[in-house]
Length: 306
Ligand code: ADP
Image (cartoon, rainbow, N blue to C red; front, side):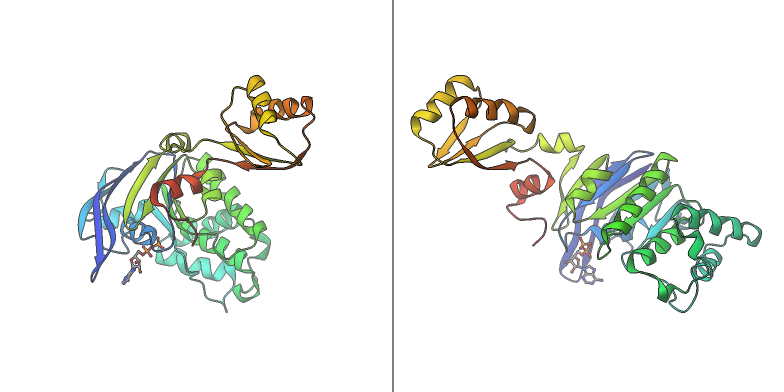
């Protein structure tokens, strides 16, 4: 559905996007995950014709974006980071404004607005002024505006920044509904939990470069780090650890009363049973999961959120 090849963009001496390539299949939710300043918005802005790339090509549904930007615009809906709504107009009036910009014929307008308001769950608030809406509700109207012309592809740039958990969940549900209806979605964020929940495939971006891409399990396979559980005991002797080694196959590292066991959460009960049999009293348990955060850390030496 989307092919991005060797895309680059500089602002004066800042290489915001540096020779990135990726492909997105039809019906996928594709996540662009990276810290602030990584180049996510610049990439998305080039894909949505807002910015012109310095080099590289973008194809959407087989159409060359730079050569046929008008045709591409019909295929894409864009949810920008900033909320772009008139505070003193109602939700309906705002959507009417956007609908006119998109060139939606007037006889289809009412139905389009009704459909998108229903989808985002704000049909009953359509006559209320935007200034009476919460931040999360405004974001949902922003999403509705991008959907008015029924695009095939939806670009979303950090759509949950600064909103309450309830609205965030609502947005996730809208994304999942759209995706089930066949829409391809490109989603940028610096929240790993969001891509873990939503995305089929992910590109991790840092300093303008894609440093890894694939499904979550492919990305987990890239790093040496293994899932582990740290136990803290009231008391743990070296001979206790040796006894545990006799009954458990896992690799273990002792640090005074703490024991790091290289095992998965599913194996936790077996380890606890072995500890109980040796009458070891557990004081604390900490799970060290391999997730996108730890993958990012292992690939870049940095945290996703600084
Ligand atoms: P992200 O969306 O991942 O936070 P951006 O794409 O917004 O990152 O920014 C990537 C880099 O490009 C940053 O260093 C940012 O400061 C710079 N940048 C983005 N837009 C502009 C611009 N219009 N002018 C100058 N520098 C910019």
